Image 1: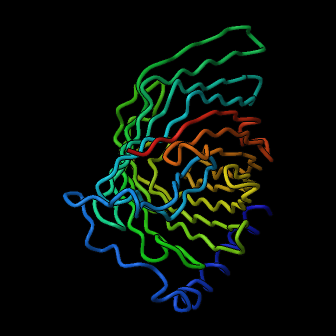
Image 2: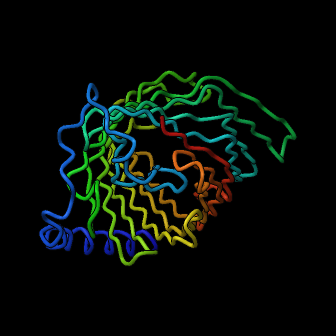
Length: 290
């Protein structure tokens, strides 16, 4: 029911985006001349915008000619299913972004070390697996609203390269497309939807199947330096071996120091809403623009 509500809300907001974009036409400054070789001057940089801390991604891109690093400092997830408790830990998880134009950036993400610990309460056995995570390559193209306006929209394709050991990943190349849309509701409130469709490898045998994700995120600027987030997240994996539906309620906060506008600290907790979803995910992270 939660996912159906998220999908219905996303569809309604997506349908309203064209009209809102039309109202915003001409509102943004012209920064089209900036590029990788002609970087955006410091005075013209946008307010620091990261895809952290929530699961949803924003439509904003990194300014042309600038780098941005977004990473978990520590991330731990707990899940109990069938008498087995699994703890997954990420010891940093950096995403490196580079602005190519005023509305296009490219990104790479990989966890240098991921550790999965599983304890079977029936047998008492504990297994441990660790190593490099999978490599994700992405590109984000903002279609409207990167420099202001009531609505911002982007296309965000990605491909996953299986660099992780089979004890950590599934050893398959996978890909997907996101379409983040942000609605500025007031000077303090922003609503973001981030519909996503993926082509994932089947758990058994060859072939691919669809995976759909639909987060709905509400952010509130509590002050000039602190932003609070509340999010509902839903995911349906249509694997032929059996469809799996997940849902969570996510809470987070981010702080950008007044004297360090290119730096952000954040943290949050994601709480599972059904048995198939990890019971809790807790993380702390950082963003730095150069």
